[in-house]
Image 1: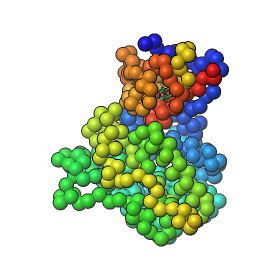
Image 2: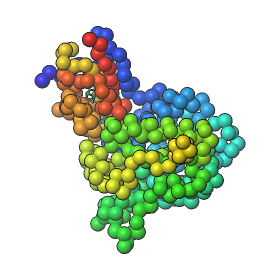
Image 3: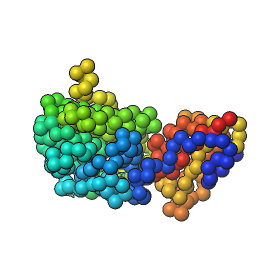
Image 4: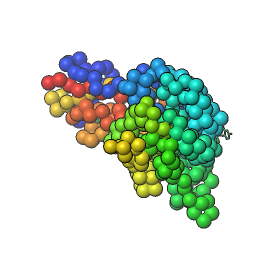
Length: 262
Length: 73
Ligand SMILES: Cc1ncc(C[n+]2csc(CCOP(=O)(O)OP(=O)(O)O)c2C)c(N)n1
Ligand code: SF4
Ligand code: SF4
Ligand code: SF4
Ligand SMILES: [Mg+2]
């Protein structure tokens, strides 16, 4: 089979249907091969662009591998103390109600370090969108177990696999937030296949539309691959996500104020 | 360009980190890893005939390696 020249665009009549990435990404992220977080970042920024929100968006970023995105995303950002992004986002949105405000947090950040923040922000019905990148580990610090690590999963601090008796059960934060009265929209997606990437992008869009409609706190949990923390090869990351995480964390819309009103 | 291809790619091989997510994501399996490596030392995808321009490779790639075109025939 002959190899096609892919160094330059086609010379004949052709339509470009996908860019390398959005112009809102200014450079390389430096994350591991096969990491799911840069895919989530790309669909988040594409959504802001498509909703024409770039000029009035403020992002609030927590601490984790995704923290390196603050250098390369061409929107206004504030980086907060570990886990406190929903509180900072609250202040920004209350002082500047004309802005679109989101948080970008990991499971370690949102569900361990700052668990109370997102629940209280939801209970207050803050009009902000929280994006949770859930990979079930503290990736940035070497892959330790977090509150969302699924039972049986091996991490640096649960080498024999997470055991409920020893380590407790995982916390399904999206389900908790969905049950809080001040929540406007809660959904869970993943980035392990092209189909799920497309679906998750729609969930992110719904969440920002919910924020703009003033429905209360919106949360999109995105399951992302962390092959480095999971002790799997990069090509095995998507299947590992499917087999280990999606049973514990079913994908879909968990709560939608506007859908329930109709 | 073969008449069998409805789409094609520009592949920025120097950005590739060799994770192979694009290989499994390609429905007609027209991507294959190279035997050569880029400056970072990673193998990268090469394209064979039969691309449909579906954009699945671009959607799953963490490192922004692909630009996708649909050919007008
Ligand atoms: C108050 C505080 N405690 C601990 C740390 C160390 N720390 C930095 S990143 C991180 C883990 C973040 O995990 P997660 O949010 O899941 O992000 P990931 O790296 O997995 O994407 C920790 C514990 C810190 N920066 N500040
Ligand atoms: S450690 Fe995990 S989350 Fe962090 S960059 Fe590597 S793969 Fe991504
Ligand atoms: S655009 Fe679709 S068919 Fe073409 S290489 Fe990418 S995944 Fe394969
Ligand atoms: S998905 Fe992207 S980074 Fe991974 S092998 Fe394919 S082109 Fe390279
Ligand atoms: Mg994490």
